[in-house]
Length: 198
Image 1 (cartoon, one colour):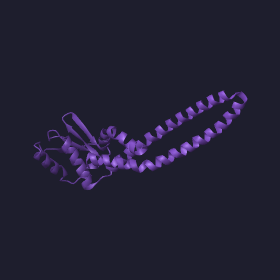
Image 2 (cartoon, helix red, strand yellow):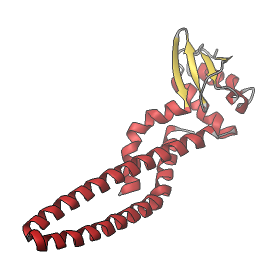
Image 3 (cartoon, one colour):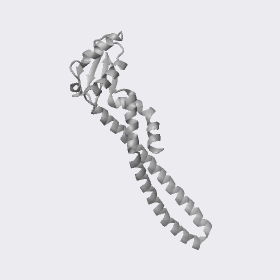
Image 4 (cartoon, one colour):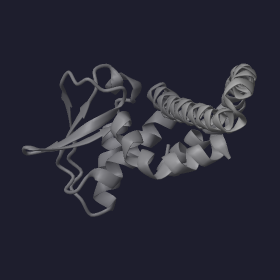
């Protein structure tokens, strides 16, 4: 699965969540409006006793405070929703199997490998999602690109949800699914937010 497809999946997940957040926001707005209705009645009574100018001042402060609280709550809800979209995408990519998963891993390997003799470390159990010939096929493609076709599979226990770590000497490149999502997140977060909250 290419980065473009990952981006498309993230955007698709974001659009699916739009209606849910809109309903939550509408409910919170109604609640604040109802509370403000009660506050307005109390302030009007106070205005009769203390003068209209004090009531208006108090009303402005209460409304500003309520608006600030609403904005704060909306921002928190938006951040949670954006996080949920990226979490769902991570889980979706981690569950990929077969041809889709092999294509994603092969594309990542071909883009990341510099020399072609690196060690490939999969997370525990992930190498079982790949065919036995998978690494041989990637090595053949590397040779066609003018690189060494000598990638080696190393079994280590790594805490990853998919993807791999590429090691050459002491240098490691984290190509886990989580790292991939983190790489595109900064670029995609404004787009996801625009889709969700436009």
